Image 1 (cartoon, helix red, strand yellow):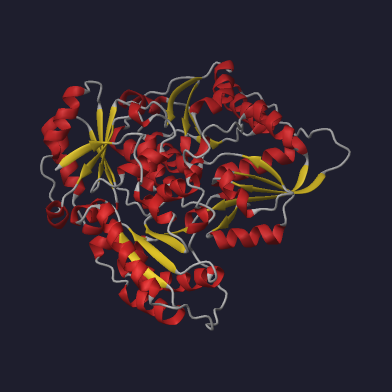
Image 2: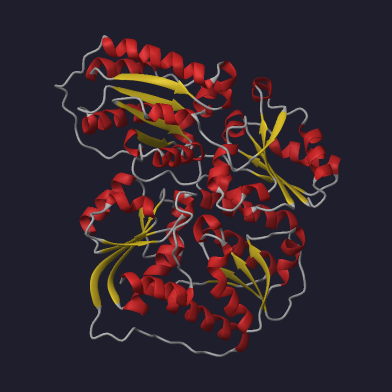
Length: 551
């Protein structure tokens, strides 16, 4: 078995050819972890109109229910694009290859009913081992050309309108394993994805920092290892990496879709590696189907359970919990928060997660207070409250109101000073323009609160595009968050609400009218590296001035 470094020059080379096939649409289906890369490439090629992505749940994948859903969704896509297309290519991932998913009935039915040719193209390292990608694509194009010459489209089919889970304008959210890798970024933590090697490409796309500065590796599972669930040579590969990188103090073994589907016993493998190599090792049980919020939350809690110990409290200390570049961008964006904490003579023991080390993880239990920035940090904060009696508070750092309110929270907790305030920008009346915010759960709520206080907005709708979960409903902080599950639902919300101002990542801009005021607020968990050069702010007084420019 080989083990390969994840580097920033990873690319999907076949998609460019697919997107340029005339009168054709590509539908890529699979776990969300397999799909974001394709969206990135489609944007770069200016061919997004030719790509649809269908993120599948684990239950639908294992039960093969996704095939039935896909048939319905293809019918809807045909109804919207009938005059423009003659063929559809379904782009498969490793999960369908392992499960031997059968799309033949779907292909025949669509051809019979609509005269549209549907072809299957396998992708990923498992498919690559059967036949090289270029040859596989070449064969498919020859067959497609022949069938197109001998098939006529059928027009008289009535197609009913219904909502679909497929995404077209908005990319799939970054996966749980990318969230895990992002949390553990650094040269002192060796991160190994257990995968046939294809999962290393999404990680390289999703990391907005320089991935070459993080010890990120992926296995290259072969067919025998996939069938038997045994990984040979992993320990030797890890030994070699450690010998070349003496700073390594922790190994993280991170699961992906293939180990999840075949039921590979990674926990025992992790225990064996830890015992043999005498180095701390943690298992992160991600599966590629869940979003990055889940991956970060799981990783932080796994680190806590494995490495945190009880310590004596240190006066005037805090931890920051729930930072991730996928939600907040680079750590420098939070400079006003760090300056505030320093100005109050408080010390930060650990930022979960930035520049983590075993020492910081262990010492973090000495903190008097945990400051929670995001939903993904909440599980760790609750764990530390229960196990180590460290209280936590959810803070808002957005704009002037957010940072001033955070200052008041800290003064009240540490110095018993109460400077409660309700400051409104001096205006003759409330601003009745409609504002829509699309962001991560806590960020959407925090922006809404700060805009009300700083700019007197009266009509604000805070949204998150995310699969609804009972967990969200239990969080009082998210009481006024509107959750939309699909791109179709989001389009409907925009149509109903008719916002005057939209604050969101640029990936949502194509859903709105040109006359609307658009305020960019990057959400890298969706757009990854697409808009890295775009300047924006959300924290403190810088953000206040940033919003003021548009408002």
